[in-house]
Length: 507
Image (cartoon, rainbow, N blue to C red; front, side, top):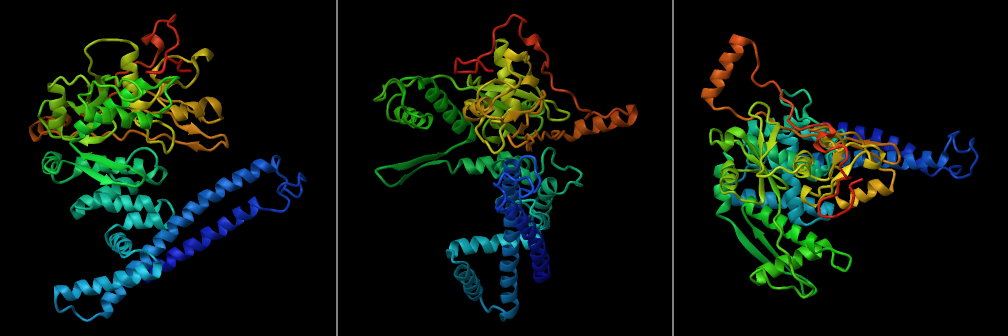
């Protein structure tokens, strides 16, 4: 079985390598820079053609690397299964363990890797070739990277077979009843793919998130690990709401300390602020100046019925992901000023409104942008919303309105990239962040939200089913989130909006 599959993979690699060879030759042709259109293949712009060929070659190379990874796992699994068939029945558990060690050691020596790495590779290979057929097929086709495949293996661990198959189908089977929306899994950078997979896993795990959180919370701890050059690592394993609050408050303090006379980076300022708070009462000055203590603003997205305690659907903590509904209820009921509640529609899971105690026109808009974008919208960027800057997609000076569809929150780095290069964001909407177009004309779609309808209590579901039968109206009809799209959030004479915490115009 493994041999025939490996042959198919090898044939696919041959085809990809042939295509790659053509692309590589087109980047290194003797006439590429001659200036002679005939020698350059007749292209209008030979240099642009050559640059495009390099990018096309990289894309094809990524496909070949994925296919090679598929071939590697098939060969590893094939060797392990062949050795198992050759061996006589194990007489004891110790006998079986020694044979597994021998197989692992052989793989480690052939690949020149550690036995620990070989053991992990063997486990992944047996999982992919045995029970993750969709993932292996996508890897074999070059549609997924090895990192994506590893994430799928990792996140399906400890799920029952039906749950693991459903998770795999949701992201990799376009014909599945509940297929993931937005761009294909292989076009998400691995860290964003993991975030989406983990969110789905938390919602559909057979053991409730409350039970798993209670078990994990018992393992909370801090750790200290010495490092080189007089440095050390200090980390903490905490409940998500506490960790997110600490991180966002530290980041807000660090941003408040930035200025023209401050030489420290944001990363260094975070570390200095945290050290000051931990080693003092939080009021003493650092060696380079005082550390302010501003209030962070963290969004907590809560299904309406979970907030009422009717269901146990997970809530979403901005910058982290799914949290137990009891944690979200405690944050809301406790009146934590750093946390803003966002209710979601009980019918389709879309956001409804942002809770607030006072109404300021720019503040709810920025909060909605944080809710819609969650992170910097640039491809592969994972910088989450607290650090990002409000920005008009079409500049205010060029007539761009201050409406949700013309706003985004790129991180400072990609905000500068937009204004100083030909990278261009495309149109957005109330619920969809902007995509991006590169200077070469390649289009990179945005990561779409993947809201899911919440689980209804059985009694309510029976009432809704009865209503559907008698009226023909489906209770889950989508409802547009209630965010204004026009410029009426600002008076026509309003001044240009400034990016939060920067004092600069959000162009």
